Image (cartoon, rainbow, N blue to C red):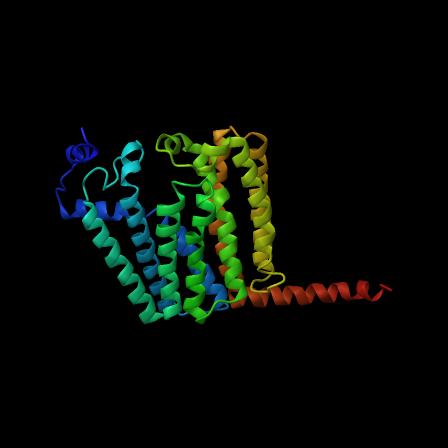
Length: 329
C-alpha cells in the first residue's frame, strides 16, 4: 500500500466551518509564535526608549504572526512525510488528510503577502523585508537544507528565530544598530540549548525518521556538553546590552544576571547527568521562561519611569559613597 493511499484512508472530512478554521490554525503551529512576538515587542520598546506607538506595535505583532504562520505552514508541507511516520505528529492537518498540500501552499503564500504588505504599509520596507528573510531562512536553510542533513541544523537554521528582534527594531527606527544585532545574537545563541533540551526528550522520534538532531548523532553526553558551552556564552552576551552598549540599564542587567545564573545551574546539572530526562525537560521549559522574562526585563527597563527611578537611586547611592571615596588616595 502506498503512502498516498494511506493518507487517503486517513482523510477526515470537516463537519463545520469551525473545524476547518481549527485545522488551518493547527497548520501554523500557534504555540511557537507567542515567544517570537515577545522578542519582537521587547526590541521595539528598547529601540523606542520605552515610548512606542501602540498602533505600530500591534501591527508589527500582527504581521509577525502572519509571517511566522506562513513559515510554519510551509514547514508542515515539506515535513509531511516524516510527520506521518511519527505518532506525535501523525494527526497534523496534512498527514491526516484534512488539508491538501496545494491548499496549504496557497494559504502560506497569502499569509506571507499579507505580512509583507501590512508591515511595509504601517512601518517600513526594511522591517517588511526582514520578515521575509526570516521566512526564507526557516524554509530554505533550516527546513529544506539542514534539518535532514546536519546535526548543526538548529544552530544555523535557528537564525530564523532570531530575526523577529531585528524586525521590531527596524519597525521603530528604520535601521539596525549594534544593539539590534546583539539582540539577534542573544536569541541565536539561546536557540541551540533551548531546542536541544527538547530534542533530548524526543530523540527517538527523530531517529525513527532519520533526522540528524544532535542527541541522535552524538548522544546525550556530548549534547549536554554543547548546551553547557552555549549557555556559558549566552549569559555574558545578554549583559552586553547594558555594558558596553548601554541600550539597557541596571534593572535589565540584574534580571539578565539572575536568569542567567539559573540557566547555568540547570545546564550544569544536565551536564552532570545527561541521561536524566527530567533534567532535560526542566531545562527546556526553563529556557522558554528565560527568554520571556529576559524580554520582559528589557521592556520594564526601557520605561521612562524605570529610568528615572534608577537615576535617582544611583544619585543617592553616589552621594552616600562620596565621603568614603574622598578618603581614597
